[in-house]
Length: 332
View 1: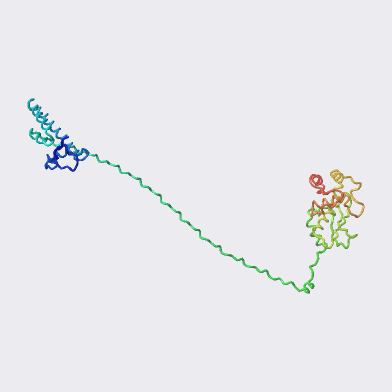
View 2 (view 1 turned 60 degrees about the vertical axis):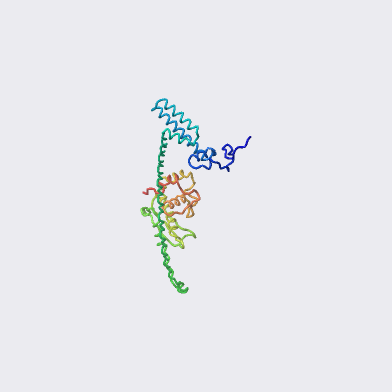
């Protein structure tokens, strides 16, 4: 291939080449230089945009004239515009000015972006209830006064001297009659109503035998008689009252029980049928029904002599209920 001059445009193969098209000034030179620029750069994009705008303007002017002028004029204008386009980008502006077209400015309507209204976020107020701490009431500590009980010192009793105690006279002992009067106060049976009956109290020294406590003289089947009680030293009023009531029972037995058939009924109640109701001597009666009846009478009307009889126990319950009428019989 033959060599071409250095300024020939087809030989521009390096960016360091500076030819006439790059040295020219003005709009035409700039347009010619942009022809050989890189499409990917900003200048290439700008050149392409200007070319599109120019073509659009020319086509618009041609259509406008075609409406107002005859067909021949429109055809001439189109041919003229086509020649102007073939002449290159440097002559597009001059061709457009010769046909008298005015490129209306491109008006880009403003884009109105509606304001974004963000509704305010209303955070409900958080109400923290006040913490009420109840007051702590400490009750006052009341210390009770210590009451010291008064100390009572018992009076000191100084015993009398032994000689004085020995010389003091002992209280006089009750006589048998005085002690007997107190014993009769403990006997509830109305012995005073027994016709012809009397009671005497004597010292134990007058007893017919040692340990002899009492004796009653009577006649079976009729009232009247005498009971003599022998009072021993140290005998209590309760003991003497029981023995006295025992002797009164002998008088009631002889004056009312035996004459009214009480012996047979008592034997049937007890289921005991002895050969003799009473002994024929002044002796103990634990083994005779006369002694059993006198002991039951004493337990019923006085402090009593207790379980004295050896023949049968003292009446209680149903036996006592059956015998009771004979413990308080009607004395004629």
